[in-house]
Amino acid sequence: MRNILTSLALILAATGCATTSSSGEASCAFLMLFHGRTYVGIPTASRVTGERPLGSVHRPTCFDHNHVTADERAAERAATRARHPAWTLPGIDPRLAFAIPSEFPRVVFYSHLGSFRPHDLPPALRRIVTR
Image (cartoon, rainbow, N blue to C red; front, side):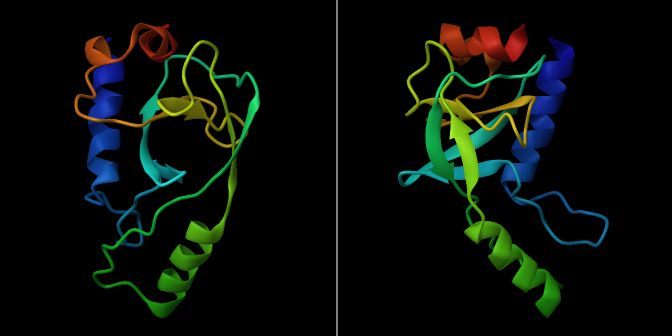
């Protein structure tokens, strides 16, 4: 459980564009958009498999562009145009959470409306995150 909470804290930092890569730019890689809703990536204890194809999701633009080169800005724009194949999760409403197992095999994307603490997640999602 401690490893999951540590990983969760790191992802929460990344979702706020607060972490930087080796080149110094911010990273918003663990946010996805689907039907106008923002989803945050939550690490899982084991590989996630999808149940049914859901559709395509994409990353939002990360607006933290301090000291970013024109090439880095172009790469960011290209990344936000890229579509990722989302899958439903067994027993979980896809408006709440989905997976992208081909690209992020140990992450579920959760439409958070408050808490990220594992014990506050819906039971079906909590089982995936902590198993």
